Amino acid sequence: MTCQKCKGLMIEEEQPELAPTAVIHRCINCGLVLDPLIQKNRLGSRRGKESFVHAA
Ligand SMILES: [Zn+2]
Image (tube, rainbow, N blue to C red; front, top):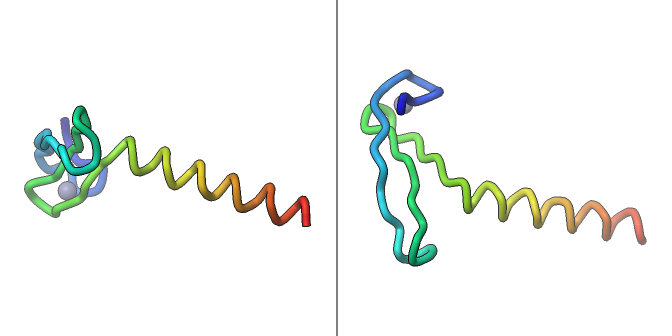
């Protein structure tokens, strides 16, 4: 897997603190971290906020 930012090499890294099966991708060149779990959570909370604003 290559980094979408610098095209460097990305390694898989287990993150047991996040979840027992959580695996992130970290670029060893620029340090960019791809975490599908965190991205999902951010999307979910942002959607929740938006619907709350519309309701109010
Ligand atoms: Zn990179």
